[in-house]
Image 1 (cartoon, rainbow, N blue to C red):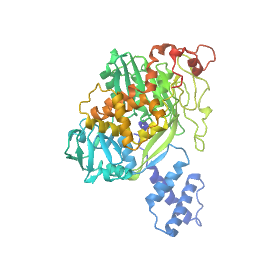
Image 2 (tube, one colour):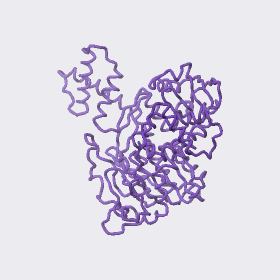
Image 3 (tube, rainbow, N blue to C red):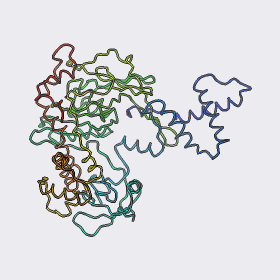
Image 4 (cartoon, helix red, strand yellow):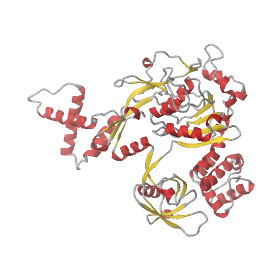
Length: 538
């Protein structure tokens, strides 16, 4: 979503639409005296006003205008266009504005929630939860006098959602304590970082940064993380854009400016009512010229694809993982009256080589990728590597994700690893950062599952040993040291991350131009020696 263009003052579209309807209705009532206008817009407004008038006069029950117009007419009209245009009511529009600022109203806690159980996993520094002394492993027993263990899951989620926007009293049991403590919290606007995981692989001096999205603070967050992790001393960066659904295009351009030379093309925006706009990198205080691998998957979309394509087409980074989502359109936010808003698809964006990566969406205005919007059907990186258009970004090196079997999926969905970690820490108060999951811990987990009435199939138990160890250690670290520590454990054990790390010695060879005339990029990578590619099962 391109909020960078949203600062322009826009007349309230909804007001104009309703005004046209009223004028149209008046013209309709005076049809005997004057001829009705013939333009399509006014005729459409005439039809809407006529139908709405009949509903108001004759429908069996009284009509709520907000529901009929906002939830019915407007959302119905937008649904016929594309999946990205949307109407936001007051609450939704305020949430959207908070997300753009990188903030949310709440107490600054990340919670683990299961039926009958709520655990604190992390509290943001300076937040109400942090000031109240809440931390990883704390168990919330009551919310405003309501016992957590007496509620079903939906009721519990509803209670927590309501509580975060009003002053609340929590009854909290700290780890190792027998008597719970009452904590009073008042919600504030809490900053939500987009750099949600950052650390260094010590043996390699390669930094890892995961970006969850792009907002106004993202460039500063990435810059700070790079400096904190070692800056010029680093030997490489693994930038993880998996599950990044995008955000501010200006922010993505700013992040690109940290790794591309000033004046490098990032994207071009073209639309029917939008003047063509070219985005280029700018000179930054810090410029990080180090080897890069960018991890992407099917949930990498929009602004995250903008950044990925720019780094790929300037031969600046190796893209690894899975093909991206394919969202190459720009939405602008139009503020309306009554503190509501409208997101409209206004343009398409094109990568530095001129390609569109928008995937076709049948049954919408994006059913086909119009080749007339591009000058050529052949696209290349700066060094001549061919790249594909019209359906997301194909990575240089395909790394399939680890496939989980149904049994461990069931354990994950039921929160069994977190439940076990919580119970384990209750009986083991000497767990430190050297903790590893040994055979005794595995035996305890096996017995825990049996006590919970969960069958342990022998074939899955043997097959999933490495994954089970990783999940148990991750949840123990989450509850002991917070999400940052748990995320690092989980990331270091991620098979896609492990394979991506092996690509760093091969980056110069992967980024070379095509080996043979007419060879596609994908086929060229497939012919690399096995030690230079992770395009294999696993």
